Image (cartoon, rainbow, N blue to C red; front, top):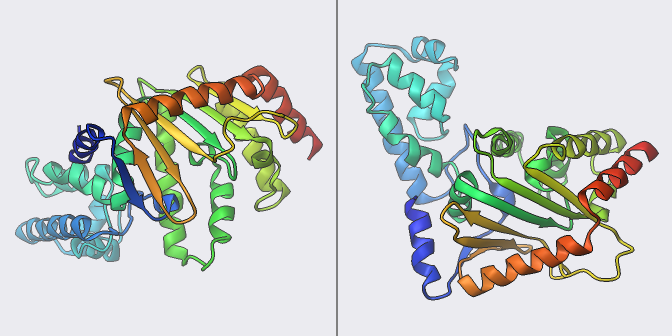
Length: 302
């Protein structure tokens, strides 16, 4: 269990709501810049260690980068703590520099530092969860988004995001989708409002690809996709989107966000109620089979 998860458990004893700060959309990925001082300190220290070992081996940045599969400028960014290498890049650097596992000792801390403080707890839970229950009302859940859909959403951000930030966020979100290919994949349930599937963000072609991916992922044995139709007269999810996470030890967490803040609820009573509420939402939505036919109908109408 991560330190963040342990702090969440401690908070749960007093029914805490852990404030996660601003912007779920700021999730991180390989090559991301650290966004908090603690994470920055870790990445800078790792970069200094990397540089020290490289110089000890007498390697120029160009040669070292060539062996890793990166440019000299990217190696410089790693060493200066401006970019975060992927776990695989750290493992490869350890091999090339004959570090004997020294760099690999940093891997977990560096990986955690790729996320802002507010997301680190949720990221850890997502990687270790037994079950994820997700209700979405505005956009397709990040775990289901195509790259084109991601880019369309990011292009609509105001103020506009710079090109590097867009690339970092796309990389991050795509990396999170590895959850579908885990050896012991968690149970995943997606319920989304019909409006989510009708918004043509990025244009008709982007929506077509998005609907196709949802249908494809929905065929996985551990995934259920359901649609809450607009004609439904009852909806227990009127308070907005949320995610219920169940960890392997059975402990539940609830993630929710508003326009400017995010929070991870750890109170056992509240998480139990959220889980029950999700069950009601599921019962009110179209069944998975009906939802598949519904999405196929939307796709055929494009």
